[in-house]
Image (tube, rainbow, N blue to C red; front, top):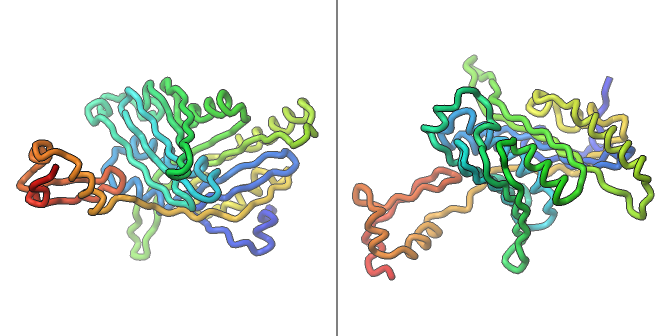
Length: 314
């Protein structure tokens, strides 16, 4: 019979869903994060009428963004962007401290219809994956870029950590639709996503030998690889219990969970400010049925303006 992780036994409240749960497996000297997404990812994906393969790909991007963005402790934003020549030519997700997520995908419906098999990785083609840390206007942005050559987001992120950060890293992502029964007997299908990230850190002062380092990492990675997609997605399997199931032999310790929610920074005032930067000729080209319409790519909210509002626009 399994037991919850130490912090759970001491009464630390851990949400069951929409969270990032940082942890440490002390014997193997690894740190990690577990993300479980329910209503948050369902809201992001349901705002757009994406085909299922595109929704799954964006769900992976959102889960990966949460795993990586949680490294920001105080303030800032983590932005993940994939630009490719594949069926999905642009994929954007960002995480804003203390725990806000958003994302969208741009795809070719015609090219997507030509895909013969249901393989998310094939949607990405060749291009690049950029990961940007923005800590505010007074701090220089940091950006890491890795080529995309038809591999999955997980493989591209693994390549980045291996080549750029030289940090042994394991990442597993899972996305699927989940059937939820309703009180009236009629259920609904909702999107769920999950992810696990494990990283090996060197001990200060060189305490670990090269052999110990490799053995610790091999053992921790082998344990992490046993996680199943359904475990990352199961709303009935609590995060702390899943971590105990995976790493109890390594004395796993969980830390305070980071609650997650959706957000969007668009507003009518911000859209109007943007439109006023266009020339009268460009604004005239935007008029449809007597109005200027602008749709936010993230939340899909539509704003409409009377062209007369911009008369005399410089």
